[in-house]
Image 1 (cartoon, rainbow, N blue to C red):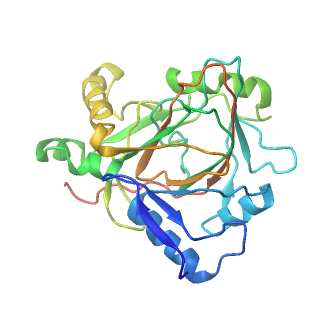
Image 2: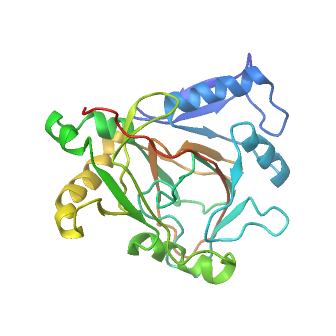
Length: 283
């Protein structure tokens, strides 16, 4: 604990953590300090953590229950760890669109962890955006409009499904449904912090419940642009052994696809979440 330090990564969100070895068993005060930092900063970054799969799983279990991704199989010996791989000849990457992971599930995940195994010499960064700030910087009129709305999210939306097609062909999970769809509050109340977050994303959200796609599109298009404004984001440059741990309930991310001809190999773990809760009264 005495060596643990928190270094904010930007004005909007993110913090790099130093002074902790994630390969070791963490004591309760350290885990509590990391969770507080995670809730405060939405995404934590760690450097020089070349964890073995069992060590990565042990670290993840300090914060929640691990669940499997619905479409892609995990590693043969460690099915809870999903390989996120883009090879030299591939043009489309996995997760290369702004999103919150699997928002089309009835119970979306609380968090995700990504550990870099192989990265290009340049490129392949990940962007993150603060959905608390996205909500808080809306006008009062827009907040009132959104307060009672629910958004329909689908796994079949073109931008998102395109980024996973090759992975399903190679490592698709047996028994995965062709379509997952769920409706959630547009304004989500975080179960731990009590803060309000904007909970729509361009990769999964297709319309507002009770409205047509066409009726929903103008408002959704505005929200998609608004929630990823540069001042609401941070950018993380990976090195082998870098680890990112983000809160899917209040942050979005986007894997930048700017390293054609190079290989990138990551290991991902997803932590179980809760049914999104909305506002009990208008904002």
